Length: 304
Image (tube, rainbow, N blue to C red; front, side, top):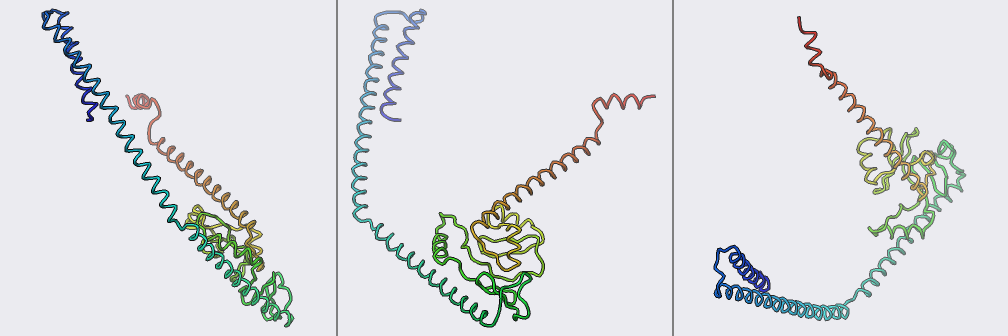
């Protein structure tokens, strides 16, 4: 307890004693002589003195707290100046940005080298008379090779160029920032395609892989709820089968909307099934018990 509170408690004790003595005099329990009256006056004087001392102690504590606050502010001021004088944040950020720019240039170089290699393969295919890939896939007459979208398909695999090298570098650098959400780089998707069109084509946002499935299981649903998988729209499945699928931001936006709608429909169906099961359980439980007034009814039919 602080000194001010202790003095206030003392003042209240003196004041309570004076009030109790006065009440005792009024009730006749104590003789109202000069000594008793003097005792009351003395108690009140001691109470006022204690209250004043409490005020003095409180003001003293306030001045001490303000002095400590000012000292802390003075030290903070000095620490801010020292931090500013020794900070290298501007130089550090500039150094880091230089590394980012170098990484972006390296990404552009890699993409351009890839595009040049794909263009060389495409030129060889043209020189050998390979034409545009038919809807059914590469023809045997062209050696199982097909040309589409500036790239080539052969043996069930595809090699495609990056459509926009600068965009690839920009989006790859942005994707390294965990605070910024970006769509995957819009490039042609390579990989083997099945002989028949799958009911669902799922895109993995984390790994960039495509998965053709006959049905969507609980594992895929959980990943969709976490935002890790997307159900690609039907026209994207058709493009994938034809070897011309490009995952543009527009395609991914449509996939996000379709996935959200599918999850909402699945949740509604699950709620409907749960409600139906609950109603069926309630009906079966209701049949196991007599209706209202059943005791009287059984009493009537069981009597003589």
